[in-house]
Length: 90
Image (cartoon, rainbow, N blue to C red):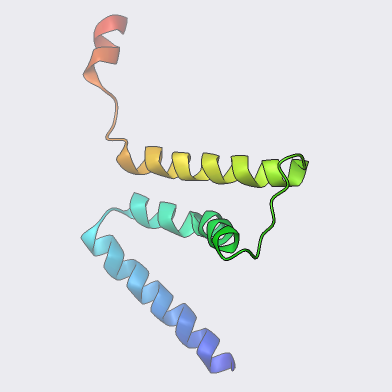
């Protein structure tokens, strides 16, 4: 079984480097950090995760998933500073 884990780690790195060639390193970093959000969403879809909206742990999971996905979208779609900001400051 140990050889399967080594092969997974090897191919994961190879596919990550190939993906960087076709996109940006920011996207690669963001996608690897989205694993907990995808895990929570899939567990909820397949009914492996029960949510009680009055529980603080369930609220934290939901808010954390929303913040994680919105932060990933901002980091991926942000192109840099905009010109209108400097026109007001300068």
